[in-house]
Image 1 (cartoon, one colour):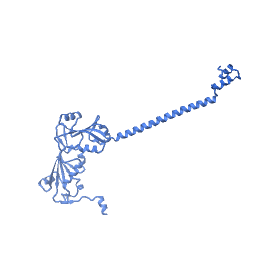
Image 2 (cartoon, helix red, strand yellow):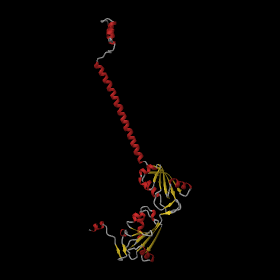
Image 3 (cartoon, helix red, strand yellow):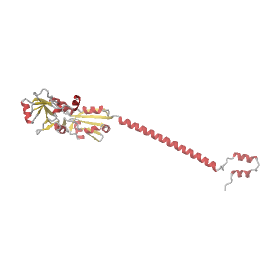
Image 4 (cartoon, helix red, strand yellow):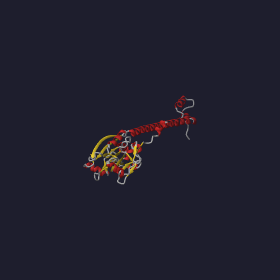
Length: 311
């Protein structure tokens, strides 16, 4: 059994001695009451809780700060143009081939890419032949995008229409005709446009206007020829293709190289047994035309807007 320290002091000094009173004053009370001990414990726990709360608050604030900084970095990265090293694989024998600058210009104008290096390589050179073999290129022109090609394709998904990623490199080999087949050097996509006019119809549209419509489809004829329906050659064409209306345009050549062209043409004309494409149904969209059966000019129907404006 422990003896309180004050009793121990009383044994060493008389009860009424000044020494005992001084010892008691100078000696801390080691036997504090339960209420004091509980109060001290409460203060201690309050201190621990406050410290923990402060630590948690600081951690949360640091977490928020890190999240904000990460979000800012990701936002900045998402709008940063992709750094691209560009290699253009060309065919020196084809001056009418697709102009890759049309595609490259669209990419740079989108501000999604920064071209940091550009090289032009002919596919017949040693380096060009190696690239053709490495990437399995069936035809040229073609473009090779390196460095941050994946970032660019993610930002401009339309690029997938012109090629595909091979690892971290984008190979743009699916470009429009004309192009050169790398296996044999043959030029694909060349064709001739023959414009059949009609002298009997001064108000009829000029079939050469079809040139602009063809250009919108990415088709530019290598050769062009104009023949009137009254000429011997014109009469032969009327008979050969059973024409009932003029003016018109007849396309001949390698139009199969143009992906999707047949599907578009079936809405405005026919593909003949000899491979020629004859413009038929779309004449009313071009303007006034001549009916060979009635021998009369046929004006295109007025649009709804025109009719409403005249009412």
